[in-house]
Image (cartoon, rainbow, N blue to C red; front, side, top):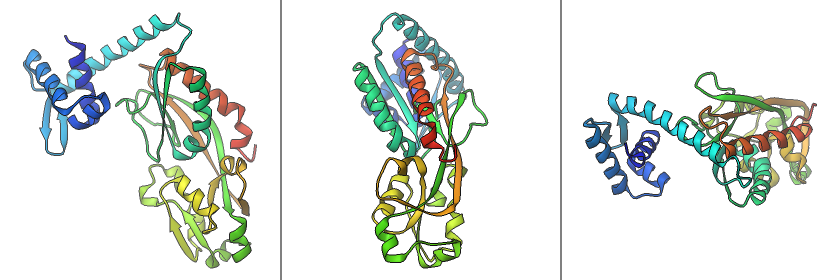
Length: 296
C-alpha cells in the first residue's frame, strides 16, 4: 500500500477537511483529493464523506485510520532508531503551549536550543487553546490541566503563581487599592471567560465582583500590555513580571497557584528529536522553578 496515500489520508482525518490537510502538507487541494480517490479505489471502499463544512470518516475510514496510525508509529520509531547513531538532531518538533509560558519562557529558551541544533526545526505555537497530540496538532504540549483520558504520557512540570499587579503610572493617578472593596474605583483587566479553554484560567471573578470598570482581553500578552500601559490592575504570572520592569504588586493577600503539565504521545515520545526537546523543556523549567513559584 502506498504510504503517500496513507499519509495524506491521515492528514485529512486529523484536519477534518481537505483544504486544512493540504495546507498542513504543503500540497494543493486537488493533489490531496487525488490521493484520497486513489486510496479509495485501491481499497474499493469509501473512506471519507465530504460535506460543505469539511470531511468525516466513514466506518471503513475509521478502521483504516487506526491501522494507518499504527504504521505511522512504527515508521517514526524506525526513523528514530536509524538516526540514533547520528549526533546531529534533525527534523521538526512542534510544541503547543499556553501563551503565557509560551511567549515569556519557552520562546527565548527554545530559540537557544534551535541555535544549538541547526538541523532541528523547532516550531512553537504559543496560543490560548488546547492541542491534540492524537491529531498531530503538536508533538509536545504544555497544558494547564492534567488530561483525564487518552493514550498520553503526562508529567507535571511545575506549580506557578499569579498575583495582582499595576503599573506605577496607574497607581500615581488612581492610588493603590488596599482591599477588594477599593476596586470599585479601579479598572480591572481580565481574560474573556467565555473564551477560556481551561478552568485553571477562571480566577478573575475574585477581582471583578467589586470592580468599578472592566477591560477584557483573551490573551495573556494582551492583558500584560494593557496593565503595562497603565490601563488598570490585573492578575499576572509572577514569573513573567519578575523578568520585567514596570509592574507593582498590589493586594498582596491575593495569590493564585496553578500548574503546568507536559504531554507527549507514546507513539512518538521516544523519537530522538522529540525526546531531546522534551528533556530540554523539563530541565529548563526545573532550573527555573523558584521563578515560577513565588511561594517556594
